[in-house]
Image (cartoon, rainbow, N blue to C red):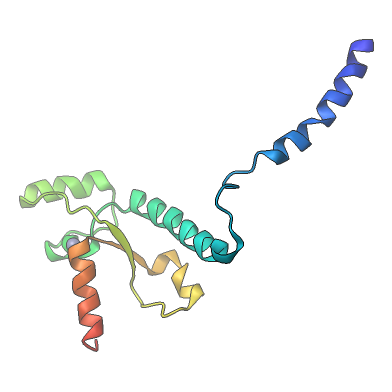
Amino acid sequence: MSRLQTLKPRLGTTPSRLSIIQPGSWRTDKQSSTARGYSYKWQQARAGYLALHPFCAYCLREVGICYDQEAVAIGLQCTKAGIGLPYAQLVDHVIPHRGDMKLFWDSTNWQSLCSTHHSRDKQREEAGG
Ligand SMILES: [Zn+2]
């Protein structure tokens, strides 16, 4: 039973060892950590959303395909319609968040867009829409 006694102190050192290895501990200059964390969080959220909604909502709307269905089903309909898969590059806010963090992080206010549609949308907005 002397074996168990030697195990105890060994386990005790584990947490302190783990605390040394902190993910992202490189590049943590205090000045821009908030801004960087924000954009990193957004990048993660955006990537996750794009994985679930890989196609441009506007492209699909233009050809009359509901984008609220499985990617495979959308792909089949695109093929039928004779168009390539309209992959989205970015996530846009349906209602412009204008700094409103609640709106910003509300995934029901997100839509996947291709860069063409995103820039077109932006221009429309800047024109006073
Ligand atoms: Zn598009």
